Every structure is written in structure tokens, then in C-alpha cells.
Image (cartoon, rainbow, N blue to C red; front, side, top):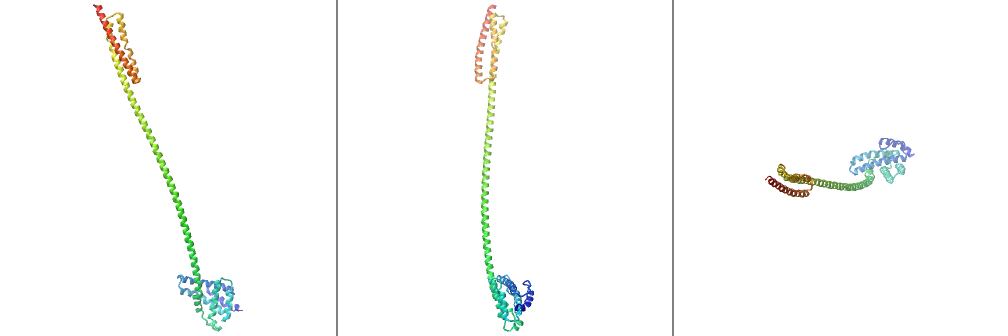
Length: 330
């Protein structure tokens, strides 16, 4: 019966609050959900006041409007009878919800009945619920907001600690990765330095080998040039000795002319012929040009000795022939 009495005014009130979806009846479970919704908004606003985010007076003005609408609808729906309000609110607060929700609901109910009088007509027409809403804001809502702020602060602290630990872990991981990267870079630099050193040593060794080969080739060329000069000198000396030998043998032919012109005896002519043919062996001296210098010198010395002996014989024979010719003429 009570529900039927208060259904129409409360429904009209809810249409005007803008705090919840419109309801079609005053069933306790429906009103309980509505009351929980507005109470959470009040607590959140008070928490913002406690965190100095919102002004307290402005936040209370917004809370007071919705609080008066809800409480007035409940009183008018019970025709101002305090006992009916208490009975109905017991059904509203008994629905499912947390202990905090039930505590707030009970505080809201006791606050309304505490401001009502025994005069139903006065309660219905003249009861002012602004002071009730102020008291509820300053006590129950503030206590709930403080608990929520504490819980929120704990959650924020937990999030901060988790974030800090995550940042530390990420920094440690980044430092470890940077250290590993530095080790890899140092190793690569060391290997590059070793490779460069090995390449430099190899190039230096190759350069030394090339220098030695060039020096050896130059030395060999110089030795070949010196040997060629020595050979030319020996050849020139041999040619000079040969020329001297030929020059020494050539005058032997001169004494032969008087012998042949004097029509000397056959023996004298034979001697002259022997003398004339004797210088022929001088030609081998030219063949010694390409011989070994020591052999050439020995051959030249021997030839010179033979040539000198032959020249002496020729002169002696020529003198004998000459004397014989003079004796015959006499």
C-alpha cells in the first residue's frame, strides 16, 4: 500500500533530477540503485573537494539539489508519516549491495526520519530538508569520500611503485643491453685493429721483399756491367799484345829481299824461305781474344819468346848469307 502511495511523486521527482534513467515505479530495488548512483556522485564530488580540485560550496550546491529531490519525494510518498518512511527505507537499504552502500543508505534514511516531526501535515507541506542534506554531506558523504580518497591514494601509490619498478627494470635492462653492445663494439674494434695491423705487417714484408729483389737485381746488373768492362779491358789488352806480336814479326821479311836479289845458293834461299814463313804462327794470337786472360798472357809470353828467338836466327842467317855472298863475289 505504501509503495502505491509514494510511486507517483517519487517518479515525477526522478524525471527531474537528471541523475538516473527514468523509473516507472517505486520498487525498493529500483530506488536502491538510484540512491547508490547519486550517493557515489556525492562522494566523488567531496573527494575532489578534499583533493583541492573542486570548491566545496559549489560541490555542495550540486549535491543539495539532488538530495532534496530524493528525500522530499520519499517523505511526500509516505504522506508525511515518519513510521512509513522508516519502513520503506529499510526495504530500500536491504537490497543487494556492499556494506559501505548499506551504511550510506541507512545514514540517509535515519537522517530523513531524524528531521521529520510527528505532525504528518507539517512534514508533508513545510518540512525543510536542506539542513538534513548539509549534515549528510558533512558527515556520511565526507567519511565515505575520505575512505575513497585513501583507497584512491593507495591505488595511486601502488601504481607509482609499480611504474617506478617497471622504469627501474627497463633502465637496468637498457643498461645491460648498452653494456653488451659496448662489449660487442669493443670486440669488433679490437678485431679490426688486429686485421689492420696484420695487413700493415704483410704489406711491409712484401715491400721489404720487393726492395731486396730490386737491390739484388741492381747488384747483379752492376756485376754484369763490371764483368763486361773487365772482359772488354782484357780483350783490348789481348788485342794490343797481338798487334805488338804482329808488329814484331813483320820486320823479319825485310832481310829476305837482299837474299832473294843476290841469287844466293839454294841453302841460303831455304833459310830465307824459312825466315819468311816463320811469322805465320802469329795469327793464333788473334784467337786468344776470347780466351781466359791468364792463358792469353802465357801464350803471348811464349809467342814473344819464340818470336824473339826466330828473329835472332833470321838475323844471324841473313848475316851469314850476306858474308857468303861477299866472299863469292871476291
